[in-house]
Length: 310
Image 1 (tube, one colour):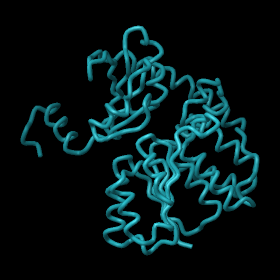
Image 2 (cartoon, one colour; image 1 turned 180 degrees about the horizontal axis):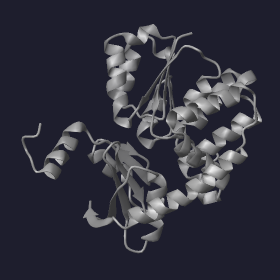
Image 3 (cartoon, helix red, strand yellow; image 1 turned 120 degrees about the vertical axis):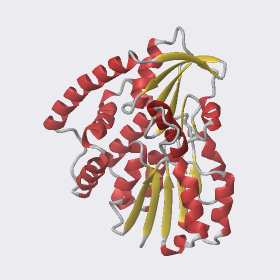
Image 4 (cartoon, one colour; image 1 turned 60 degrees about the horizontal axis):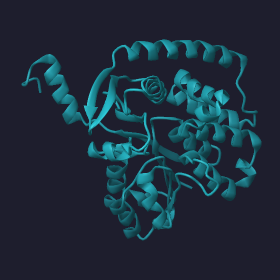
């Protein structure tokens, strides 16, 4: 069976579907994408008829819009497509047979793409996925991605995200793919625990140093803090939101490589609406938007003071 996986490259909620699929598939074309890449990718896939090469196509932790859903339906082979996501902007996918988009389930639990995909796999392949160790791993991913770990003080879950930062994307996928294939129990080794302790100290210093560079401004009529940062954006956003809750409504984090991140400080603000102005989206309290190359070129021109550099 030939499989295509289109998934988010930014965090472990996007990476874990590949780890899971690796347990049951050998011939996987996995493409790790930024959030703004998915609609052009699906459009290209269908218009060039490349989708005909695959027996199944999974889209995880990435948001598609109604026109893209309609395009999938127009292929006459919508049954090979499977969409799993938890962003509010993607709930439209529930109107189509290929879509599972749930932000919060009927029990009031926040879902993520991995948790939704895992439930599907447990139902389809219980002999492989219905086990305590893998379920624990998926629950940690869900807790991290929804920030339930912070609300419940689940520091054991947070360690998994820190380990991703230490190992990097490829090593993280490789390590946990092999761990589950071998049937070993999911737990942190002594060496990993030591690395995690060192990483915690490094993260703390990074956030404190980045905090010193924060600008204060007003955007969409709300006071906000603005920082440039390429690492630990969710953790940094939460750290700054808590510390400056008395004076700011939200935090904007600019990563010149990946884009904008918005993190809420106060209730009553829909950050997904603000992110949509910049071509992005996400959740009410945590959203993001891309920075395209045209804007990056303009920034380079300003920094180097040369309008003719390109």
